[in-house]
Image (cartoon, rainbow, N blue to C red; front, side, top):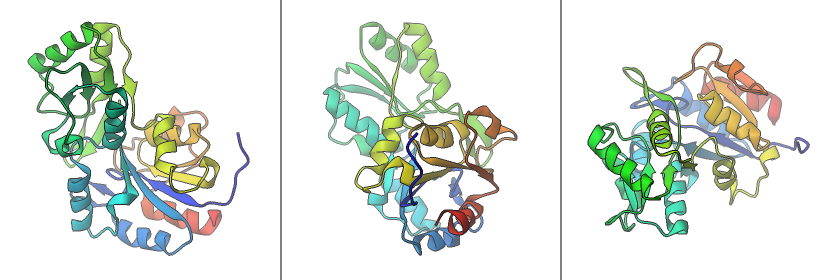
Length: 259
């Protein structure tokens, strides 16, 4: 692993770390202001497939977070980039609110399957259509494979179990584009001029946020909000650089020990 360098960038997860659906994590807005008062660049990275980047930005602005669109890197963006690169026509198994991020992509007569979190579409008939496409040789692109996520009413199944069902049924392997894939974190840092050894990731998902970031050489800070469950920090090796109560506590640590 490359030697640790002076901190230049902080990547921050959104749902579960800064907010949970339409409620901000207490103190998160003020903590973000304090982080912005330093010399580090801040970027927001999310696996959310429930809404377009524009809808996500509006949600964050309503919660009084000072965030601009060009600071957000989503797994939807990464999936669109891959679809364009492969020049395929995807069957889009995503929430209808995420469709604007695929505007202009040809989807008639599909020859690929793109799957995200789409609770309204995860029923037998639609999944069977996807299954048949995959049997005919269509590639399977998973926006991410999270096991579960946090909603206001509790934990809920993520897209991972449905991706794995299609993999199992068709004996194929999905190309995953979101966290914890190394390429996702490297793409998120692209344009910042920062190397992974100059960055830290803050998130509530031990495997996808922290484990993924640490696999490319970043420091990973796990927060105990959102989907965090007791002993999550023991699920990855090496363990998180730091486990703390919430985003404001993570910012306190960065200001006191990493700058």
